[in-house]
Amino acid sequence: MIFPTDRDPMGMAIRDYFRHGHADRLRIFSSMFDEDEMPVSHLFRTPAEMNSLERTALALSSGKVLDVGAGSGCHALPLQTAGASVTAIDVSPLSVEIMRERGVRDVRLADFFTDDFGTGYDTILMLMNGIGICGALIELPSFFRRLDLLLAPEGCALVDSCDLAYVYEDDEGNTDFSDVEDYYGEVDYQMQYGAVKGLVFNWLYVDFDTLSSAASDCGFCAELLRRGDAFDFLVRLSRA
Image 1 (tube, helix red, strand yellow):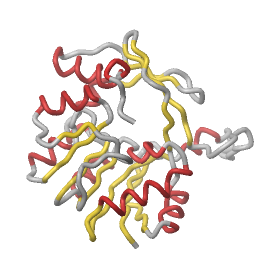
Image 2 (cartoon, rainbow, N blue to C red):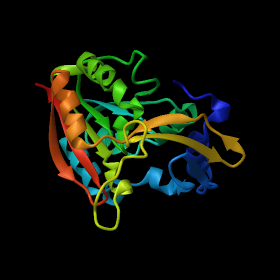
Image 3 (spheres, one colour):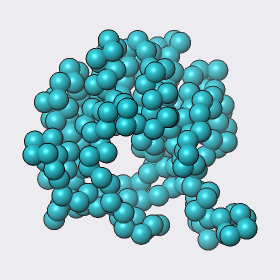
């Protein structure tokens, strides 16, 4: 779903930071967690400021690249500079506007699941828990069908996620999901920038074993490439 321009808090924050060098608080609400805040400067980080998962994914990206949920273009720009053919997509109209201003050559306002932005991609890049756009486990088969349509014959998707099981651990390290109605990694979010509140959306944090099983069921292979320092991990998804 494309965000309405007047309900695009992340895009507003990205625009203000790029044009004025500063931004107000980008607040994040969820029924599962306490209020949080995203540092807007983090959305403009350079490769040197990125974590090991992101740097690994950038190094492995090649050929015709699709950057999904590209934000300010922090991944698309270094790939473009390195000579890759990059298409950057986002559902935030203001983010798309700023990516164009920053010099990303091929930017589309597009929904990964429904819109037409070409096929035959050698690398599909989905970082900052990019697979979260699935929203729920039930959507993983649709996600893999979409990958099958978009990828070149030998192409792959590089995606990161985070296993939220640690949230449910007690002091002894035992995990208790008894109070969780659905899958423990299905989270709802809403963002606010200034007085502007965005739409409530669902986000998926999927653990590796669950992702690997879903991939296998859909004719894909999930290869664990690297684990991070915060229960996060990087996976390469390719046709089996």
